[in-house]
Amino acid sequence: MIEITGVHKSFGKAHVLRGVSLSAKAGTVTVVLGPSGSGKSTLLRCINHLEKVDSGRVRVDGELIGYRQAGNRLHELSERQILRQRAGIGFVFQNFNLFPHLTAVENIAEAPISAQGRPRAQVYERARELLTSVGLGDRADAYPRQLSGGQQQRVAIARALALEPKLILFDEPTSALDPELVGEVLDVLRDLAAGGTTMIVVTHEIGFAREAADTVVFMDEGRIVEQGAPAQVLDHPRHERTRAFLSKVL
Ligand code: ADP
Ligand code: MG
Image 1 (tube, rainbow, N blue to C red):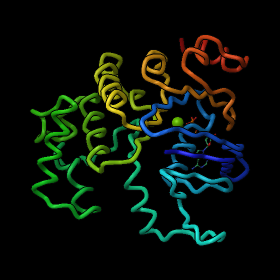
Image 2 (cartoon, protein in one colour):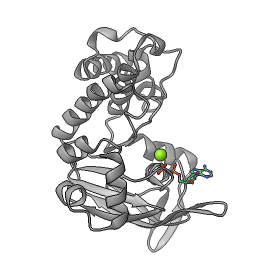
Image 3 (cartoon, protein in one colour):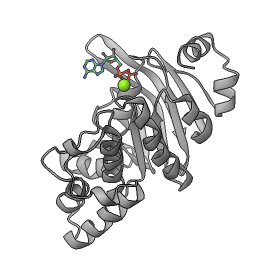
Image 4 (cartoon, protein in one colour):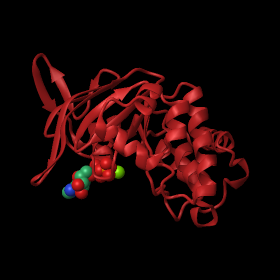
């Protein structure tokens, strides 16, 4: 489902991704760990073309992100084609990023109607089902400011699901939450994982990584230092930097 090969990305003189390669099969959960500034968010942003890679390739479900291949030539996609491609890749942000002037159900229905042109009645029905599936069936008409952080993040997850994405990228989905609200969001992520959603999750929640991940990836200074099954990376890390990081977050 995801194939990343040799990706480099710099911002000015800062070489933020230094040859990242990573692949994940459909239906798997990849958890990305690593210290602040190691390039985790930039990697996610390159996968859905919120950032453009300097070199290397990103493929999602066989499709090259940002380019169309014709013979052995690559053509850059137009802005419209990139938007279409991006719509197939869900992104859940640390700070929820809900539209403040729209209710929960309107937040979820907005993109399927305006970007995908799907019929309104059907989209709203599906949006309400999705709200129920994240435990918020009774809050459809609430505005974001009337919801807790955990509830807002669950709406944001339902919003990502409404586009029926091939995969969902989560960037520290619980980092902005009060500790007592983390569990309700992780429960939703666990349900998605059990249901076979392909996900890449940047998080410091080691317990979640242990239970839900198929692969744990440790990044440091723009490189993948180590990756493998959770038990291997979390309990028997091979690299000193992984050990040092884990000793701080565990
Ligand atoms: P992480 O998510 O692991 O904390 P990031 O991918 O956000 O790391 O950032 C990696 C590095 O890239 C940091 O040093 C950050 O300051 C820098 N960076 C990220 N985005 C930009 C940007 N748009 N412009 C300049 N520097 C950036
Ligand atoms: Mg980040």
